[in-house]
Length: 250
Image (cartoon, rainbow, N blue to C red; front, side, top):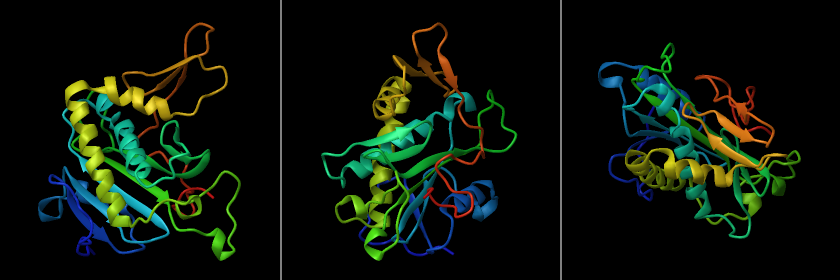
């Protein structure tokens, strides 16, 4: 069931926000709405977000114009937008980084991630009817409640992020994402790719890295053909998400 969008959230034009109840799943709701017909259908620009304070979760729906092998690289634009939205609240001396393709790290510790989905059966050369980019960020502090986190795991509160709320972060992401979409329209991956790669972890032996046309990560280790990390298949469980809890690992 949808709730009214929070009044203190400044969602930009072209974005239609839908606030969900605390234990609803923004990504699953966005998928269902994109697959629906009639009045239940929610297409481009619809953004579902969850109003809970220990976890920021939202998902945005897109209607791409390119074949899937190109359109799915919007994942990298979504990760850029997520990082920029959090950077506005983050302590300035600590970095926000990525692990390919969608894990989000703060000062080297896992804090959340982004993922993407498209219609089942859509081939790489077909234009999908829709794409969903979704993200989760572990937010509420747990150490001050006597609850430990595993090594390499953290939250916004435990890292000293400035005051935030789920709707505000979702709205900030929306604004950043629209900028990324404009860049995509004008320049494609020429700007989006390098900014994503600038936040990507530096692997051992990697001399250069690049993103192939289909979204695969190419790693030049100086010994012939680059090593290739394949872009995940649609619907594949993201590596940063715990399949049992449905939340970031840890």
